[in-house]
Length: 405
Ligand code: ADP
Ligand code: ASP
Ligand code: MG
Image 1 (cartoon, rainbow, N blue to C red):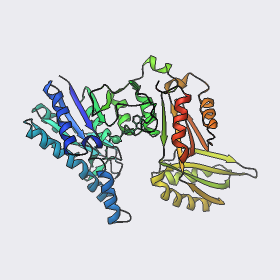
Image 2: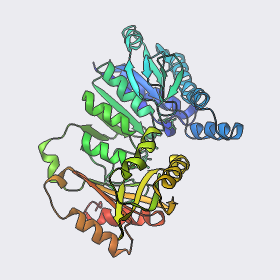
Image 3: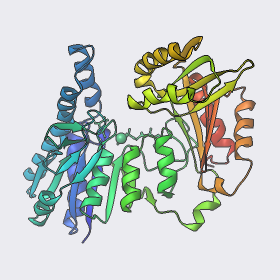
Image 4: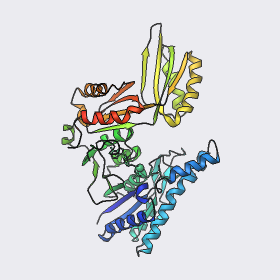
C-alpha cells in the first residue's frame, strides 16, 4: 500500500467529463489499496475569469477580497470531485485549504505556506476516505483566506505530501512530463525521464510553468519524490529527484523562456558608494523581486543602472525608481516591457566550459541581439526582444543537441 498525493491541473478538471475521468484515475489507485489525497486546481480559465470580474468591479481590487474570490475556483472542483466519488460508492470528502490545515503568512495573492496541521487529513485517510483538497489556498494565522500565487496548487500538493510523508506526489497535467523545453514552443522537445531538484528549480524560476517554483523548493527541502505525468494517458512521466552522479554528464538539460519580466534603466546616476543601495532598498521594501542587474560605467563618474522586475510590478517599480532617480540625480528613467529572458540550464555546466560561447554564437547566428546577460553555477540567461523568444528557444535547443530525432 502506498500513500499518494495526486494533483490535477486546470485542463485536467476543465469540465464534468474530465472530473469524472479524474475520479476513475483516482479510484484505480484506491482499488489497488493505496491511500489517496487528491489536490485540485480550478477548472481551466476560471481563475483568469475571476480576476477579470475583480478588475471589472474595481480598478485596484482589494487584495484580501481578491483572495476570497479566487479561492472559489478550487472550492468548486474539490466539491464536484468529492460528490462524483461518493456517487460512485466511494468514501470521500472535500477539504478547503484551511480545513486541510494549510497555514500561510499574511501576503495576499502570493502567500507562503508556514505550516500544515495535517491531523484532519490523516484522520480522514485512516477512516477510509479519499481526501480531496482544494489547491492554491490556505489561511493566515488570523484565519483569513489566502492564495499561493499562480500555479499554486502544485505547491499545495507537494507541501501536503511532505506533511503526511506520502510515498510520491503525482502532478497530473496536460503534457507527458517535463520536457527539454516547452513542447508547445518547440516540437522537437524531448521528455526528460529524471531531473534533479536543482535543475527543475532553475527551470521553474526561469519560466517553465509546468511546476510552480515553491513546489520544487518544498520537494527538495523535504525530499518528496515528484512524478510529473499526463492525466490523459498512462505513460510514465518525469521523476523529479535528488541529483545522482550520472546526471552531470549532460551539459545542458533544458531551455526556458520567460516573458513576464520588464526592464528599467536609470541613466547617468553618480558612480559612488551607496547609490545602488539607494536604488534597490526601496524596491526590496516594496517586496518587488529584482532579477538581473547591470551597471554600465560612463566617463565622468556616472553610470547607467539597468535591472529587471516582474511585469506585474512594473508600475510600482517605476513609481519608486522615479522617486529615487530624482533624489540621486538620474537624468532619465526608462522602461521596456517588450523583453524575454531565454535561459539554458544544466548540472553539467559546473564542469564544462564553453556553454556561454555556444549560446551567444547560436543567438548571433539568427541575428538576435543580447541586451542583458546573467549566469549562475548551472544556468545562463540572456534578455532579448520578446518577438524573437520562440526562435531563440528553438535555436538554442538545436545548438545544444537537445532536438528529438
Ligand atoms: P496545469 O494546469 O496542469 O497546472 P500548467 O499550464 O500550469 O498546467 O503547466 C503545464 C504547461 O507547462 C504545459 O502545457 C507546457 O506548455 C508548459 N511548459 C513550459 N515549459 C515546459 C517544460 N519544460 N516541460 C513541460 N511543460 C512545459
Ligand atoms: N487556479 C490557480 C491558477 O490558475 C492555481 C493553479 O492552477 O495551480 O493559477
Ligand atoms: Mg500549473
